[in-house]
Length: 532
Image (cartoon, rainbow, N blue to C red; front, top):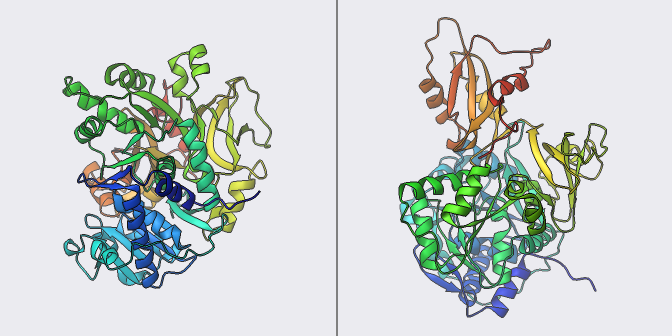
């Protein structure tokens, strides 16, 4: 028997089986049972239909971790439209590109971040703008709560949503500077949530705290997995260590996620406040990804804070989870240092490490190749980028997604990233295109040359570092460079470190030899990637 796999299956199961369970706790503490949540989703769907949104249209959302992020996701998918979550840390120019690229019909935005959309609304194809607490937003915005209150909470006559229909488009930094729209179908989202459920050990009595941004490939799939399993979402608008510990205690949280930079901030807070209670009545587990956590970080979180770490690996294009170190069997054999590795392939996923000819490298833990992935959770395509899509799936090993991450693989199939082939820096869990930052720096009238590379950082895993050659007679300072970049880039893309050099090493054709620059900074490090 064949049935279509859609994201709506998770909502339907929650409303059917766990209708009386508190499914969502808003940032302000307001609680919604899954029955109440489903009715609010229906209101969103009916409101979108009244605005003329049709099957296949794109609806963009700009929001931190909120109850209405979850409502909008399901409300959009329920009418066969495509959900486009946007990173609230981006600059107006980024939103202009994204909204134009996906041709969003409607934008829903949070009051704290809407101004960056308002700044470009005249240059994007979007027709209607809805704001959460719209009275706090400049411009003509419908108020979200008033908007949905005017529409029916009753179930609607859903269109025939198919598993191969586009469910969401998640934008990720590209090596060419422009963000790439990663198109994920209902099938890829559905399949990924099932894989996630197993490897993250999700149960219906879990209480999940949102410390991971929901916009990150829809919160690494937890928007679906927690809902469908019947767990409880606890929304926290943005990450704050003190608030995180408080909510863990108050709501007896059992599960959360966070990049290594989140772990480091929790550790710092705990060191400054050693008497703080770090859990409720239940044990806490925390999934981490983005860059490999240092062994010392894992030991501190597990021994001092008392939470169990699950290390996973993946990309926006792969949902993201494709490997995990959550293996009690291997942990017993090899010890805690196993957790700094990216791990073995997840269920129903084919992960290989291949050489330049697309052949598997020896499983000896020393030979380096590129990680390539095949699985039902891998993206469908890059939006409007057929050539980039073709390269991503066929550069070396035909039919496999090429991650650009260079790694070793051992006899147990354990993958360990050593370097990156692509020009991406992962700082605090966010992807930064070094080329995009360089393009901005070259616009400065006193910059002759610039190279942007990752350098080791205990706080960020990798710090965005700019090496700058001044023009003759210039008096440029590092503060000047950072201020200039800060006016043109999202905050997390601005160099955290600026160094002035006499020249940059170049090839005969004038290409900067970044590998040489990186080696100078990463000498003595275990790997050429961040160990957050």
